Image (cartoon, rainbow, N blue to C red):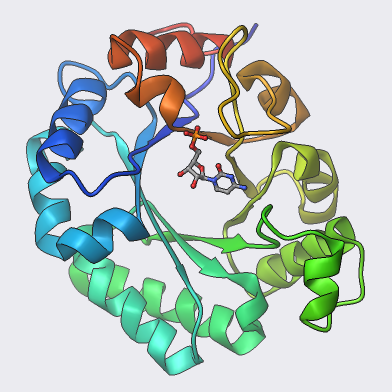
Length: 250
Ligand code: C5P
């Protein structure tokens, strides 16, 4: 199989500041990261804010080239979302999430602000990823919010909206990769959770796929949490998952 950039983003789902710092150092630190990036989300950010991110993910670790996915799932009026993007820009996230259902103007405002901040701070522009339909929602949940579509149709609609507004990609379940890839073209980032290495526990992921299956369908990035951070040796676990996904120069 052809070698590829490490697609594995390890999700650090915790409020434990020291634990997160140790984990990020272990899987993302020198001499070479075992992951493509790390994901910190609402739980960590609400507990520790920007100072917590700077502490747990310090510059020497960032300097290895490991990516930073700030999973805040922003959703508000355009002006407020743009303010949120502005507020986190100096943390230099590689990826930020926003809800595609926030609408075209909100998405465009976010894209514009990310560009403006990159220019102002002389940093690479944060890539924006749209959240489509949360996998915790089924058809009846959508109906209760006035959306009378199959969840997959709604995912494709929101994916196309995100693409047309200038977002760089979407978050999606493994089962939506192929349809979104077809709808949104070859360059669209598809960041995919619900991944389990061959032979591992599925935990509460009911319809998980293996790293290889997801990459073969067109995923560009894989979000993996517990199989890495609960492993006896997280670095080894991360490397094994990356190898399963086709990375062979670890
Ligand atoms: O531990 P695990 O690999 O299941 O973690 C997956 C990560 O992806 C978690 O941060 C979880 O919140 C997130 N996620 C998910 N399924 C979705 C959307 C996000 O597991 N449908």
